[in-house]
Length: 259
Image (cartoon, rainbow, N blue to C red; front, side, top):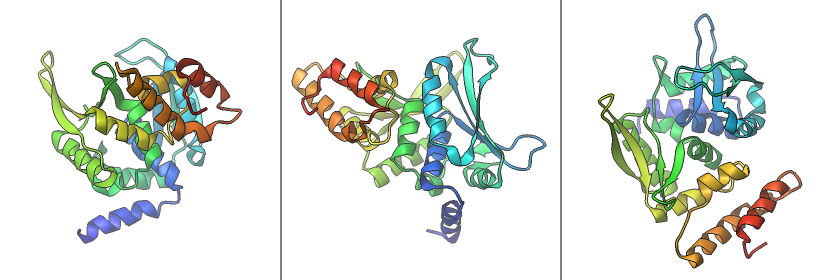
């Protein structure tokens, strides 16, 4: 490893934000987050935007980011959709500018191992909840990395295996209408289980989103119950008065054995 690698990695460690906040931001940059230095501004601003049906997810994210406080407001519809959107925008500050310099090159986001190494399970959870999906009758998974090059996807693949022990495959998606090829990360069933167990400790306990992103489906009822029980064992320590509606719904729908 060269000197520049260590200097850049240490630079991110020295930014005066908690490890959790930095991981959430980095996970968001892999997903729906944006870190940008706007015209006529000296420092960067962090923002996240979601549709109306994911407003509760946005609120949860913001509740984790008190160190870079900002506000949530309704966003103007863009050219792709007329639906209501909500946006969180942080205050501008030097600390965000420092992260921007380490994650971007000439204002373009660049995937680099130096900053991927600062991701923790909560950052991975946000990446999955932003851009991950259960597919193939909900028995496999995919991360939609459409905005990243094939080389960057290969870097992400190597990172997931070396740091987290997760094997993914890279397969292209061809968009014939626009004559463009995208690359995505695909999980087989066994690797998907390992991945979801890593992030389950930190995922938002928002029932509709949790069920869509975390509940693998099996035709075999024994395999189905085993997965439900394993998930429940991981998250049950998070049960409290605030999360009671979530756990009540979990038990009502799936009746895990280990209550």
